Amino acid sequence: MPDKSNYTDELSGVGRLIVQVFLANGAVPIQNATVSITDRNKNLITNLSTDNSGRTPSVDLPAPSARLSLQPGDVKPYSTYNIKVEYPGYYTEEFLNVPVFDGIESIQPVSMEALSENALATDKIIDERPAVQGPFEDKNQLENIGEGEQNA
Amino acid sequence: MPESPIVFTIPENIVVHLGAPTDTTAQNVTVPFVQYIKNVASSEIYPTWPENAIRANVYAQVTYALNRIFTEQYRSKGYNFDITNDTRFDQAYVQGRDIFENVSRIVDELFNDYITKPDSIAPLFARYCSGTTSSCPGGLSQWGTVPLAEEGYTPYRILSSYYGDISLVENAPVDDAGESYPGTPLRIGSTGDDVKRVQLSLNRISNNYPAIPKIPYPDGIFDVITENAVKKFQEIFNLTVDGVVGKATWYKIIFIFNGVRRLAELDAEKVSISALNQQFKRQLSLGDSGNEVRILQYYINFIAEFNDVIPSITPTAEYDEATQNAVRAFQQSVGLAQTGVVDETTWNAIYSSYITKYNALPEDYRAGDSAPYPGDILFLGDSGADVSLIQEYLNFIAQTYTEIPTVSVTGNFDEATQQAVLAYEREFGLPERGYVNLLVWNSIVSTYQSLRAGEQKSFGQNPGYTLTEGR
Image (cartoon, rainbow over all chains, first blue to last red):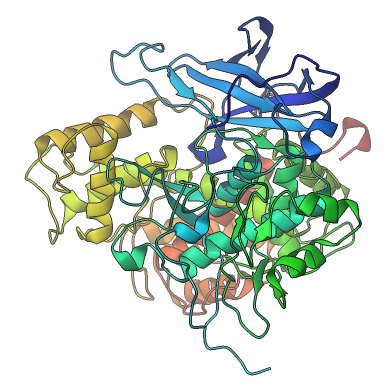
């Protein structure tokens, strides 16, 4: 696995982040969910609220320059942030290591899960950790269980 | 070119195994196909790459997934999923990750386009690799697409340089999408049934998303009011905000509308389910049938709308393989033994999960008028409250769609009612049979609700017209 400490503090670029909160794959938006965004070091950046379409405003966030992403290298060409979403009656959702790229808007979809009877919102903080981002060195599909050639 | 006997359609959903194929502890998630590709594309490459590099990679990712489905690579080996997210075997998919806006827009355009060998409709086995340390002869190099795109290569030329002689199938039909995208974008000045469909769908969606302005006269004429509704929809659902219904917007409207409609139908059906005894009565397993199975399937489908680890199933009131599969998935998700048999513990857990989700729907969520299908087809000669309801709804619909004759609301399914049903079926592209089965019932109710939705305005609702226009 790639060394996970290869984040740069040279953040000359700017990306954006927006959070969308809903139920049932988007059929029902959640208004007035509380959304807090922290940086990699857990410093609070901002608190936001979702509108009647379930969306927060878009937030500008520092990111490494996009130039870093145009060839393979050790330094990660993105910065990461953490998102916490709370709404009464639902489990608190937490997303860690959300990648943000220079000049790109990241959209974090959040599907809320209703609390079971007598449960507390913090009982099950659901950690989503996108541990994968970008072309993978260990991908080798030729060693899979079959190549999928067909007779059509 | 000779007609191919097989028509390959893009699936509505794909079932992803969150682990290596042989890892039986890993869960399966049922994900809408478009969402799956957006996730893969956001995971596999960098969104800052040149647009044509991203497009080439997305074509390969779509095609790879379709190939797995088309060849039944895993299902033919007895697995109950379409693809895995283990990158040694398949594509990266990270449950719950963020999606990049530009990638999302590109996938909305390309999700039903794919690569084939010339004169074939079968999706290519579009192998690819990163292109730094791993190599894949005959496959696409992800990093390699970047300098090619920078040199001005089109996506097709990039793909050809890796895969050789290929064709691109464009705008393949999509399962469960009803009407395919008409092929030309709908914009101000367009008219016809496709426009009408867009207008009715947006009105229905706007009940759940009140920021979308109502279209008071969904008459099939694409006017400024329609354009404003389209623009707001596009803004909310991360599409290019241009007020034009191209392929991406067309399918997004359908997908959101279907989700809204399914939830509303489940909500409406609660009335008839509530009338049945919901206590655990007896153990249910493969081969059983009856009301208890009907209730079970209802609960599962309701849960499935909120939890993509549970697949939705056809509610046949018979405990079939699909039902057993869904029960097992539920048992796994709550830590029960995956027996596929519904004993009292499993039944209570399913009910608890269902009622929790139902009760947690926000207060201002309105599913629309509760009008569940009575369960039996309504024919000429029938009578009762359900017939009256259909007559009332048809009359309301006839105010906008004047080709449909109005009828007396007698509660008797007479010749005049049959003519009205036939006219409705003709108007809305349904098989012209003159009776009201589940399909026709749901269509009439849905149209009625959409038209009513055009009139309804909740607090804070964008009314769809400015106060100075004097409407």
